[in-house]
Length: 65
Image 1 (tube, rainbow, N blue to C red):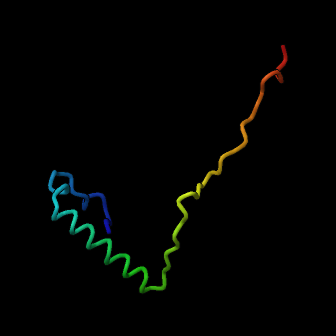
Image 2: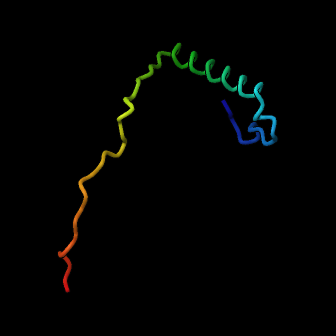
Image 3: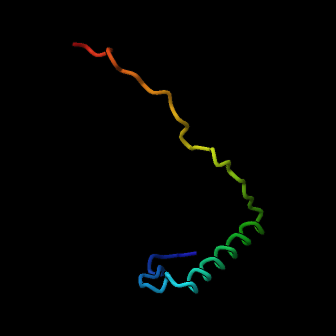
């Protein structure tokens, strides 16, 4: 996990395969630690939306002339 802005790599080395593998390994370690502390993962359905669609609002003909 990145603790400060200075730890973020700014050169092109963060695009290498090795860098991606290291990031993936760190993510897996963080996930295992989260689960070991009693955390849980809930799968969210693909159709879930944080802001469900709203009925269109029609203002036609309601304003004063």
